[in-house]
Length: 113
Length: 112
Image (cartoon, chains in turn red, purple):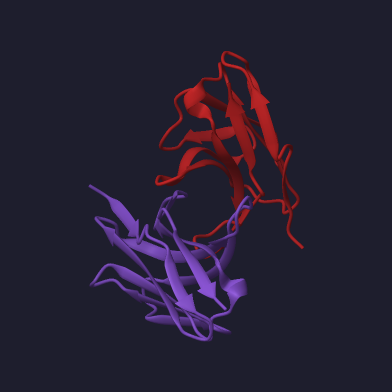
């Protein structure tokens, strides 16, 4: 069975902290995505990666960076956390090809105080 | 501007009835459209995919239609059950891109 694991289900951090969210997949997929989900706004793409060390900005990359040193792991970094980054963060990975489903992790609910 | 819209109001239906959820889009030419189910506090789970050249797709009690002229997809759950209560998301993918665009989801509640 496919598995996407996000390191934390809940996380509370303070304004200005550097925050790391980790995602690991066991499917050997090239593509990995980070989204945030907010009420009324749906899922918005922050960054995606289509191979190791390759990344592209999504629709809302400001305040975030990513790291993909190994194929199975994709990390989202909040350089200096702010209260408007309080959200649900979801990692996903589809197989290559547009006809493939995305497999999501269970999300990290991040609160910035 | 590009938009993908799902009914933001919750949909309440009686058990045993057919639930119909709508996904409308503007200024996209999607190659694929997907439907997901999301339970509270969990990540979305893939249900069905339909291609631009397909009119209809079925899987057990689920049916998806895709009308590229109307720019609309309908998602049907027949013989609905309380266990079908969840938020349902549509997502589209245009050809030549990795980026999926998601709707905001419709919350479905099936009443026993």
